[in-house]
Length: 167
Image 1 (spheres, rainbow, N blue to C red):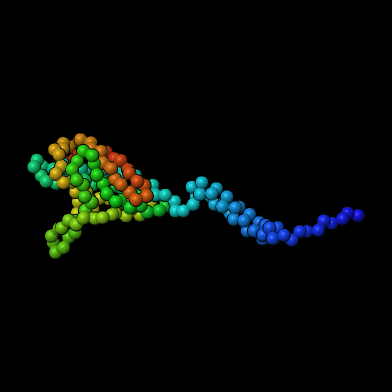
Image 2 (cartoon, one colour):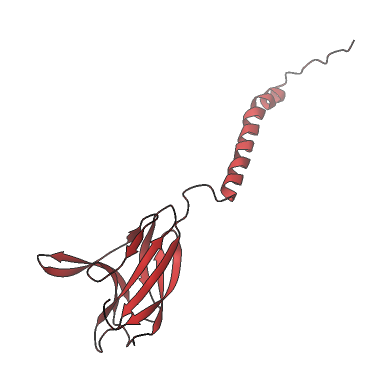
């Protein structure tokens, strides 16, 4: 017959027996969380922003401002927010919204524009647009680089076509 070894009940052995199961479970859970986030499956799915129909209205000579309009599509499953738009070749750009009150229009600055998940924002005269202050002389057909800055998607670069008038 085999002799059993007596179990030592030292403080260290007792501590080790008490700590081992929760510590092992915590390490296992951490490993699973790391693997889950590494696959990109954790958190909200990212927005997928594309910008189409980017256009700038050619301002008449001596004009102190003009406008740019964009169609922003989000094919992702979470919303994104347009924070601002600018161009290295143009003057100061400001997001704005035209507000109609009692038959007259007024332009108010807009601090951000939400682009809903699976949705589209169409900038147009009489609604949301970008005001360009002190624009340079632009010719119809010219292409101008423009940067749209989003909260989630970051910088989205487009080439805006200069048009003669509002369309």
